[in-house]
Image (cartoon, helix red, strand yellow):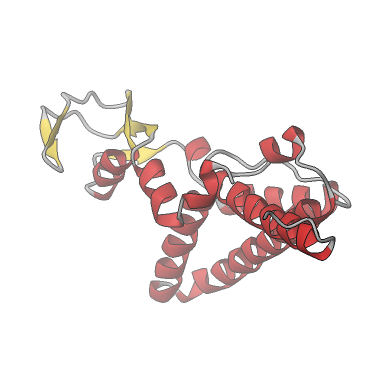
Length: 188
């Protein structure tokens, strides 16, 4: 099996946390320490490229904001849902944005926290949760079906996220192993 099979959600989250992202600086700052790393000086209105975990701390502290195109939003989730469930019929799998699942976890966590503080946000959180579940279930059905019925196609694997590649590889391995055993072709 490929390397993806051994990567856990935690490993992939760590990979995402360590990936570069751009933020917009909200106020001019001299050099500051974030998690023991020096960042800056920062000029208001400028974009800063840094590791996600540093950017997240800058955003929490009010020094920066994420660019809309770099985080998952409800409209983006809705568009991905439509594309996956309506536009990609049969076993076609549309590519997801890079780091989709770590972004999805963070978006849902933030939406859940907001819904617990603002009752008006609860409806959107529930809708987002349903959209996410639909996307995951739709893609999982396609992945399992493709892994069980087709030979490993590069095009299929390239459309999958890292997390999905792990599922694909595990199902493909299990099906191939089972077929060999059923046909009496087990390794001796």
